[in-house]
Length: 66
Image (cartoon, rainbow, N blue to C red; front, top):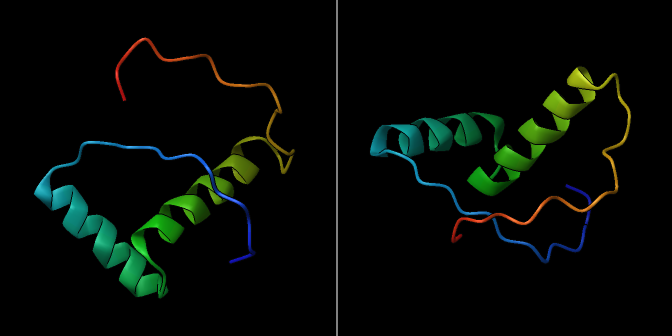
């Protein structure tokens, strides 16, 4: 992947089965689980928004503890 400065962390709760699926999908593609998630987000965003770049507005602050 392209070298991009990454300074944000996103945490998500997943079941053991979901983690296993993520690892299988990442292995099949020859990337890490983190890279797989990033690639999938980029691909789905491009399809969903006709290739437009993401908006540059800051996301709303979550009221939940992350």
